Amino acid sequence: MEAEFPANMSGTLIIRARGATFSQAVIVPNGEPQKFLTEAQLLAKFDGLAGPVLGGERANALAQALLNIDRAESLSQTFGLATPA
Image 1 (cartoon, rainbow, N blue to C red):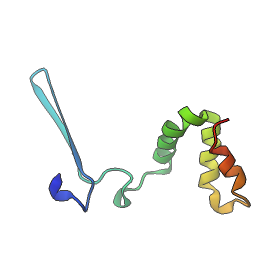
Image 2: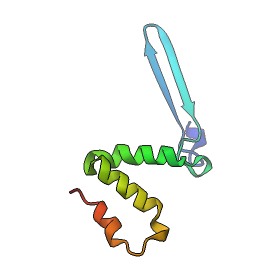
Image 3: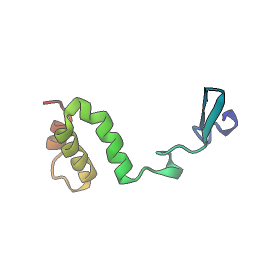
Image 4: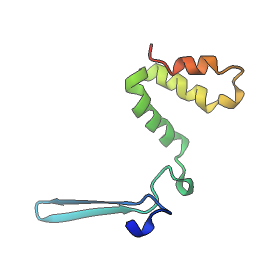
């Protein structure tokens, strides 16, 4: 994997259990410019990170506001959603 750096942030996971070895290598991880996250993947990741802090409903409202930020008249409401209630 070191040979892939700095072009890629690659990684390998190796698990040894009960006499068997399982490995998985990822050369280009999800989220890199060559492999953008889909909107569903992005929302799932956002919910996993923001949901526990903001609560599910507020995190969802913030996610939708951010996805539509180019149409926002003001960012004050969007920034307000980023603060835990």
